[in-house]
Image (cartoon, rainbow, N blue to C red; front, side, top):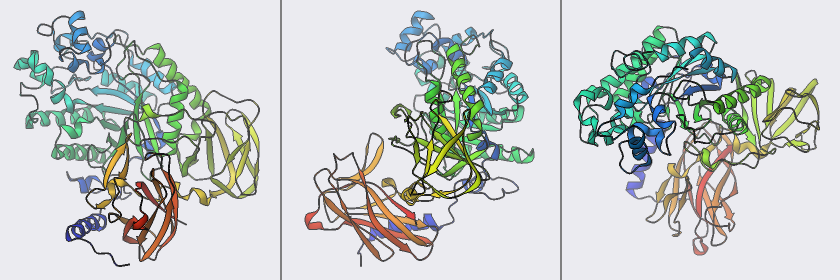
Length: 636
């Protein structure tokens, strides 16, 4: 088939090919690092994530400080107390005025002396974190409010110069390491430049307090070099003094800090670690900076698929900073999400907000200890494991990938199953997210062989019986009574297990062609989102087409399928690549946002490389509009 392209479209394709073939780095490429990291993304992308992080799976951190003094008894919106207390007509503004006084007289600087946590006990905190099963832990060393939780030479607005005159970071670092946990430090102070802009109408206009509020400025003005030098200096100071194994950065890293300083931060930390023989990682918000560098983090969200690279979710047992009126998650919710994260090659960083007096609230403590109890029995299926060939099976799917998606989570059922395996691949863990009332068929697994000593054990419950059906699927017969209260782990040893052909699209090496990676040819066709999920819509004109560049890593035969919706009736599509054309009928669906998968058949790629794939109407005369959610290719 001969396809004619406009000149502008060909230029776009040439640029995309150059990007795919021009030596682009693979995420977390496993190569030996250079003698010294340079402040370039190319150099920094060569850093590999530490093995200890991939083994650890679970960490805990704490949002705590002067903000807690205001937030603890406050109304909704107080999590950003230092900012919202200056926003007229906001609930926090009125609350502050009533409790502490008029903002013209009592600013955030005047709340700081009220922070006097007499019940703070670093040893008790660390003991709780260890009992919860955490393998890494640490504090928010500085939040958006610019109050440093260590003895800093860069500011007088720290916990040693101000109330309560204690170095919390030093105390926690010592107590955490004593219990064989890795120490982490999280940084949120990049956003301080924007955070205090509402305060510029109040005491932030006074240059005497520039160390806290940043220098007096016009709202919206860019940060100064002096500001970014101080930002970087404080990060490096924490690294030198407390030697964290993992540093973590909030969203201000990209919205305020320039790429030049971002790269310097990475290079300084990596070079410090290399000099001192340390294995470290840097976590940052997904898409906030160069994605080929560091550990991707999703705030209150996670990946919706198994990835080839490790990543991190940060979430909280309740509110970030302690607030008495807020609700908390259940242990069951958190365990289920944790298992889902680990099965997809992720780790969880869980926040608990201490009280203003320094004690961990009873609700938070109970949740952490509940997780710890589950870990005592089932931790072997989490720690030091790796994902299996796919993350799992079951009907409950995520509606949205990425951050701020956990509020869309649906309750998991006994049909929702997740998989992990030991590093040597000899042990597979099958984890049911609820207790089954009947036998369970693991329809994604194919039992190729079982040695005489093959067995299945319910962790905490002993050996269980099983059978292999005619499709070579494993059928587990659970005991009449469950063991435990949350996710249930079945340990498989002595089996030779592969994937059933029906789930090959779930493998991480399957090729996903997403809407935001397509080039759209036409005037009306466009990318849109529904409830956070991208799709290509407004495809009314049968002369318009969709193009992708596809990177094929290995020659062979690939099954092709797509996810489509067609609300107005049956339609048909054809896909062309590597000199081949396949067609498929798209059935009428229940609305534009209820897509179905449709199979095209098999494409053959004779060699590895980049291929041009075109999706277009099969029968233009009888075309009915179709929304395109994704195309997938999976090697047979």
